[in-house]
Image: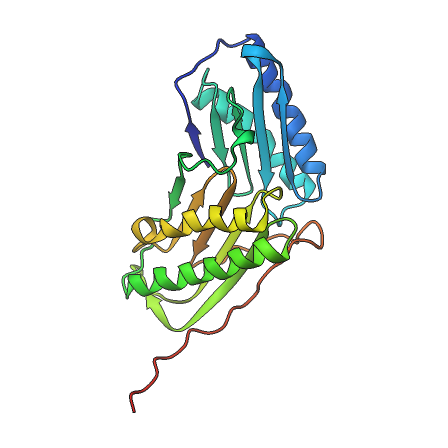
Length: 254
């Protein structure tokens, strides 16, 4: 779990704004978990006490799992970002944001902060640059699939390297697993643009590690050398890319 307390604007507990946040989060959780694409936006209140929000569940979780994940977010937000008006909470299975600013009106804000989560327990020691390059290629292929072949804007898949990569625990890994997701209301090009921003940051942030998550409210991606079984998608629109072409061997000079 990761979270961002996004502003210095504050409110008092048990205030009208707080009541509006509680009401909005309840409706977002219900709407997202009952949606075929696990997504909901909304607003509550008016004037200076108005709050806007968004909830998104990972593309392969069912409604029950979506609801249970979103149910955790308010408690975390109210404790760790107590009294802050603009908060983003990122779990593996879901994300949630609420704010006193209408961020729903500007979904592709280039100033929106990117949240990172890195697996630092196991690092890639053998040719980490090649590992990052293949991971970026995987993300690119999945991004194109999610944007153009999935109404849920979600895709997951694996890339295989015959040569493999050594790690700090002396294992050799040959598979790179990835998933990408945009909010379902994103047009294909907007989805590609959002995921492209995250992909561009991979070389600087992801280099040497064996797994990472990159989060914006409107899109997210994760890559890892470890496979975590995913649940069955809740409906047909969720598309998975199970295998991409094997890494090409360098051509021999004539």
